[in-house]
Length: 164
Ligand code: FES
Image 1 (tube, rainbow, N blue to C red):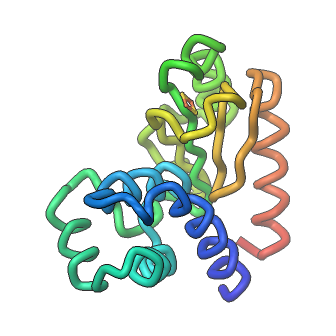
Image 2 (cartoon, rainbow, N blue to C red):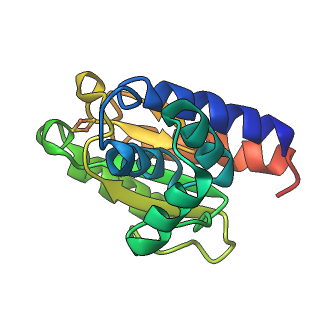
């Protein structure tokens, strides 16, 4: 969808601000993009190619070489929950558990309706907002376990609006 493409590309540009001038930063940049979206979307790859002046073929070969990278979304809504040091200290684990309870699945498993997927990531680069959760590129800071049902509802409603 055009609107999603614009959002993905805008978010990718923000992520790349700190990486594009660093040599050899491609893998780190792709890692952070996957942290934000749950996979590396084609639309994000286009921005990486343009901003980092790296041919698409080279980006694609890096993504397929490391089996850690996903090229397809594991669910329509990917909830990335940070368990890096800062987020862990501020209660990241209880946030993970709250989302797992709310959705009835463990991290790494897509819900039966194909809608939600939780992934645990290491540092999303905004530790000042710990604990941090990113849903399809949208950042939530200082998340508590009580926020989990609200965030899930917000995205259920969003998907219902789109007819998903
Ligand atoms: S440790 Fe969570 S954003 Fe850095």
